[in-house]
Length: 112
Image 1 (cartoon, rainbow, N blue to C red):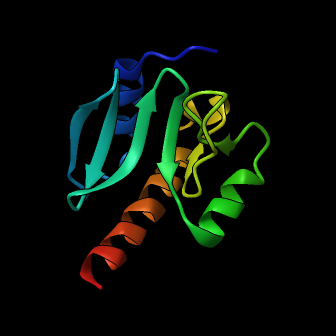
Image 2 (cartoon, rainbow, N blue to C red):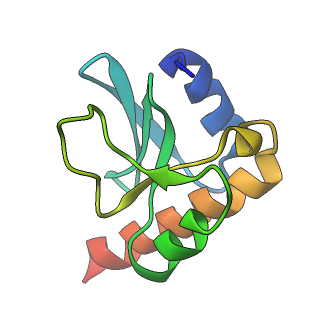
């Protein structure tokens, strides 16, 4: 399924915890979402992907329909970004948890 990055931005905004400020920057036809001035989300025709290294990545990948981000078939899979299943796009509460976890990860890494 091809996604509209602008529509995914609306979904990301709706699901982001209210205490987090998100900045958006265009990126190669898509949009990157930044929290704490660190990239946390990729919004592209591939789908909505969140940056989740380690255990968070494994947990998200265990959900049916989630997959590692890969922009083109000849490119390698991302080691940190996971495309959320389409079912999460209609469930802001489920998506909010992944966004909050991603923000916590980048905040810790940014202050280290």
